[in-house]
Image (cartoon, rainbow, N blue to C red; front, side):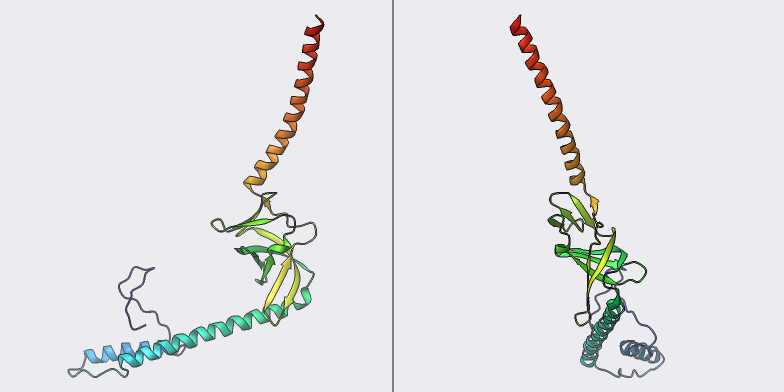
Length: 218
């Protein structure tokens, strides 16, 4: 960008990042600019820079576009290779960690091999899950079981789509009960307490009824 907006994170009034000019064309332009400034310091008659401001703006926009395009191509190639690696592993179970939580499911990154896929919310069939955006988690409506960002989880590879670069996971049979949330723990304690209270109430009622009968007979 031709505008000097500073650096927000470092709180600097001016900022420029560059590396070796052999790596990226934007860095080559920066090196040319630095060399021009240094050489002009020793000259009585200043020489104009190689590029006008309009040309630098055009070159900057072009370099930004090509860099984003290269990044997208790299990501696409990496995702394709990951899917190709997982093609023969459908049905296998892997340990993973929840790397992302959305309203439609959980993104799981497998440990050691760092392959990421989606555990769709429809695969969590033991409850209806609500998305808690503030806490980055899905919470079961009935059980209170939650799946939160950073939680460990076991998943099974259900499908690999090489064309779409997508990997789908499901919960292994008998696995993936999640962890009970505070609401689930409270509900369990409430149900337990409620069951015990009923028995105590029934016993108390019988005693009261027996007492009334004895008083009546007297």
